[in-house]
Amino acid sequence: MADDAVLIDTNVLLSATTPARKLHRHALTVLADWPQQGIPLWVSGQALREYLVVATRPADVNGLGLAVEDALANEILDLAEVQGVTA
Image 1: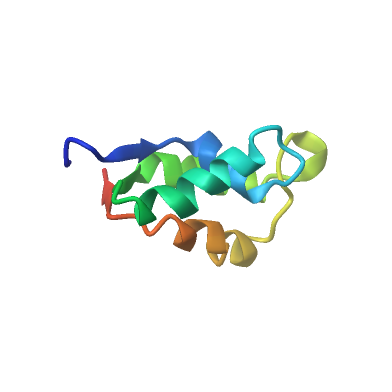
Image 2 (image 1 turned 135 degrees about the vertical axis):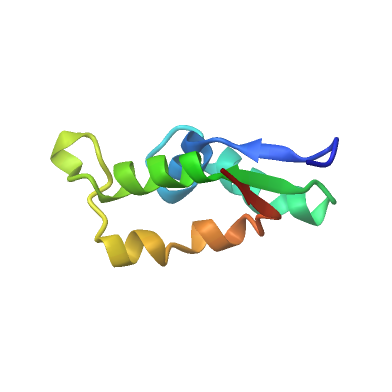
């Protein structure tokens, strides 16, 4: 991993997906602006799995209630312009 790369945590992905979250705008800034500033973003396979678990969990049990297809197609995952995925 490059010295200036940032490992994206699950909560950044969840916050970027959910406008009601307190850090929503900050998460969008990280995902959209940092790569434009030359800061590579990385995400682990574990963070992606955690994101999908929470994103597809019903809203009434602390999830986002997204369909699997919607969670996988979420533009937030593309917005990061993720440079690599680690195991």
